[in-house]
Length: 327
Ligand code: AMP
Ligand code: TRP
Image 1 (tube, rainbow, N blue to C red):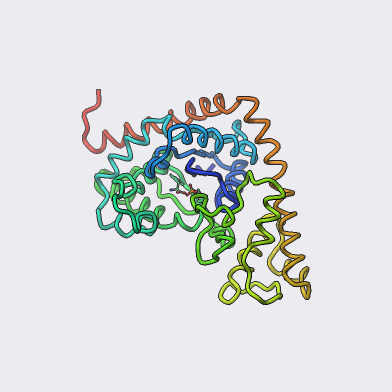
Image 2 (cartoon, rainbow, N blue to C red):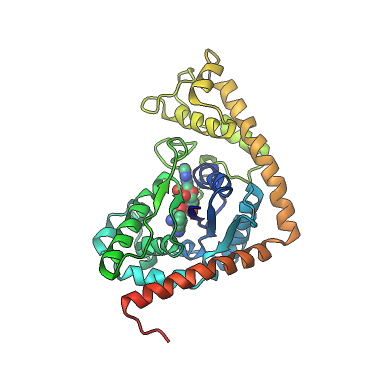
């Protein structure tokens, strides 16, 4: 069985970008692989978080994992901060990372641009992400396109460690499909849809009420044409909506083009809203039940116990190889 690992930051409401790029893949992969799905709270604090909001979001994202269909008897679901080995291996790998490598990270450049003071954690964040992955000797990492560069760095660090201290870490691979890698904003198709965008009309949150979803989609920016045709170069807004449609309706782009031939954008956007509601409404219903039941704490405890066994073993072996005295 392959080992699959991924994580989402509890730093805001999850969007359909997170669902398409990450969460829905987690659900699919859990059946045939040994899966580790984290809520990466240590990553979230690389940007300021109110303590109460961090607590609420950590619980909310955990509940959404369950509501979306991750089964805790198949996959380990846990909080990154519950396993100290993440911070520990994170530090060890930070010492193997070059400044120049981190300076090249586009996510760092985006998140730090225009800021007067930039936290060091935001800079060293990719070394911690590498630790998350290497701790579990993971083979496959389901993430969106924006994480590609971080996975590359993880591979470089694994290689660097292995050549200095002997073959040890598994080389992880990116798991992504073409359409799901990058869902764009509804108000600007040149920007990634993001939960941290201050304009809520730019994204659809997984917990948006059906009427909010309908409204946001009806107002989503499109070009002034009327042909539902997949042309990312010239019609990026419609291409983005078609990608979302394709994912939620499980239809190919060609099938969507055929269905809306000669119909204009109106009916297409209306149906897209209904496709989203059909998938998200049952998830929202389960989410509310899970929050009420209080079952999240037990799931996280069990997940951390399972994951810690592997994580502790890995960090101990890494330390031995690096020359730390072990009692
Ligand atoms: P984050 O919200 O940064 O914690 O991202 C969690 C996961 O969702 C990562 O695998 C991201 O690559 C993925 N993701 C976030 N936004 C998008 C998007 N707009 N399109 C596709 N994947 C996304
Ligand atoms: N950096 C990822 C993001 O912002 C989250 C993340 C942290 C992650 N550690 C990970 C993803 C390990 C995959 C594997 O989306």
